[in-house]
Image (cartoon, rainbow, N blue to C red; front, side, top):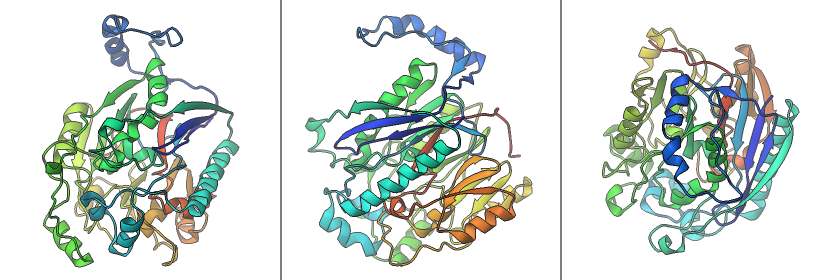
Length: 420
C-alpha cells in the first residue's frame, strides 16, 4: 500500500496534509530503539499539553524508513503551492536563476506567482495524488495553521512556498532530517512540515534538524559577478559559488541515496560546511561522496544525476559527471536520458528543461514520468520499467519535477551497499 501526504498551503497561508493508504510500520533497528528509550526520562520532564499527551512508541516500529531512491514506495509527502510567492530578487536568487527571467523576479518579487498558472499546477499535482491513490490507497486530511514570525520579517524575505519537500527533508534510514536551506525566502519553510514530522516522531521516528544558518550577508558573495551564461560557466569551472563557507548550509535535494553511500554536490545552495555536517552526523554507517558536474548553475542534484535502481543511474548529457568512471568501475550502468521535449516558450522560472529526468521511482519496475515526455518514456520501457504517466508541465514552472515535489517517507527494503 502506498501512502501519500499532500501538503497544502504556501508560506503565507494554512496547509493541510492528505494521507493516502494504510498505516504500515517499518522495523527500526534495535540501537535506534535503545537510543530513544535512553532519552525518554528527560523527554518526560517536558511540559505536555492536555490534548497531545506524549507516549513512547512501540520499540520495534517506525513510520519513517527509506534507504534509497527505488525500493517499493509505501508513504510519501507531496508538496502544495497555494499562495506560492515569487522570491525577492536577492543575490542568492539571482545566482540560481537564468537571465531571461530576471525581469520577472524584479517585477514580481514578493508577490504571488501568476494565479492561472498556479491553478493549473495545483490541478496537475492533485491528479498525481489521484494516480498514486489508484495504485491502492485510502485518504484522510489534517488541517494545520502556519505560524508567522513577524519580528524576523525585517531581516528575512517573505516566504516562498512549501511545494518542494525534497528540498527541505531527507530520510536516511529511520531518521528524517530537516535541511537548513540557503535561500532567505525559504528560511521558515520547515514550519509547514512540522505537524507531520512531530507525528512521525511521536510514532517512533528519529528527527534531526541541521543547524539553522543566520543567513547574514557573510553567507553570500555580495559581488558574485553573474551577468551572462559565459560568466556562469567560468565561475562554476573555478569552483566559485554565491554561498560562502561562513556557516553550514545545504538543501536536501543536493543529496541522493544509494544505501550506505550518499552522493552530494557542492552547489549554489550547499556548501562544504553543510556537507561536512552531514558526513559527521551520518558516520560511520553512511559514506558521503562529493561528486561534481560540468554545470554552470549547480542547484539540486536530481535533474543532473538521478539514481533509479541498484547500480543504475541517469546522467545528464549536458552536465556530465566528472567522476563518472568510478561508477563504471564499480559496475554501475550509466544511462544517458534523451533530450527533453518541453517547448522553449513554456515558462520555467525556477528550473531547466531537464526536469524531464526528475522522476519518482515507485519501485524498481515502475516510474512516475511526465506524460508529455514520450522519448524518456521509451527509454524507461527499453530498460524494462513501466511508466506511470502524469502531466506536470505547469508544476515544473514552479521549480520541480516528480522527485522535487515529493519526499519518500517509507520504502520497503533493507540497508545495503551498492557502491565499491
